[in-house]
Amino acid sequence: QPSALPLVMASGSEAETVRDHVGGLGVFPPPAMERVLFAVPKKGRLAEKVKDLLKGAGVNYVRPDRLDVADVKDLNVTLVFLPCADIPRYVGEGNVDIGITGLDCLEEAKANGVAEDAVVEVMRLGFGQCRLCVQAPVTEGAMSAPIDFVGKRVVTSFPGLTRAFFDKLDPARAGTTAIKNVTGSVEVACSLGLADAVVDLVETGTTMRAAGLEVVGEVLKSETVLIHGTHARAAAHAGLVELLEKRIAGYLAANKFFLIKYNVQHENLEACKQVTPGKRAPTIFSLSEDGWCALEALVEQKQAASIMDQLTKIGAKDILLVTLANTRD
Image 1 (cartoon, rainbow, N blue to C red):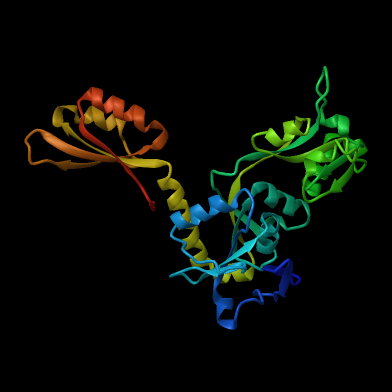
Image 2 (spheres, helix red, strand yellow):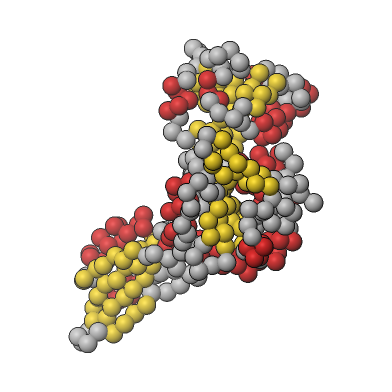
């Protein structure tokens, strides 16, 4: 059975901890134990994008001030706002049913003992892309290689992944790398003389370069992922968990496509159908004007401008692009 885990709610300058119980978080009254618990990042680089994602998926809520839980309107779901790194553990140990976190956090949790089969990666969400990299001070001449730091001092916020990475580089020296776990400002460790290299996330590389570091190796490519648990609690809520997953998938799909509408003469219809085949097939309507029809189809957003140019050359008229809010397969 999972041990009790704390939910932290801001209270002045300190934090007030409310202990949870196996099968449900103690912050909720008994009826809420039946609600789906959905863990989302409480702050950091993913929080705002996840907020937009939930809004687009119709997961609407009002978060009370100074409280890290919020009930979803019109759904039997409660959001739980947690540090991104903690979410895979909460999901894997059965304290919450579903969560959004970084792939880096998920893999680190597995490296630190969360069972592989306790957490299912449902889908990658297409934002929050970054790389977990070995970084070392910039040197003149030949760049350092990751293997150069086996047996050396390495500072990171990802000790499990870092240990596995260096042990795999040189199995004969497995366990000799001195890995120190810190929770922030990893990039300054080398300049302070605390480390020979660091393992940290890189998005744009601005912070890394400002600290006089360069990438010498890549541990993991990461992005935001949706996960759910396989424990008894998640199984009991499987229907609502699946509904949430479909809403999110629909919103993501809607953000990849436009609906294109246009009129075309019958003689050019087949050529236009080749340009806009849609996901399954285009929808075609007859117009009251003889010899003309209207066509609708989904097109990928990144190709929309080019498709409009092609349709214009073929002879299509009155071309419109319509933004989609959500969709279902």
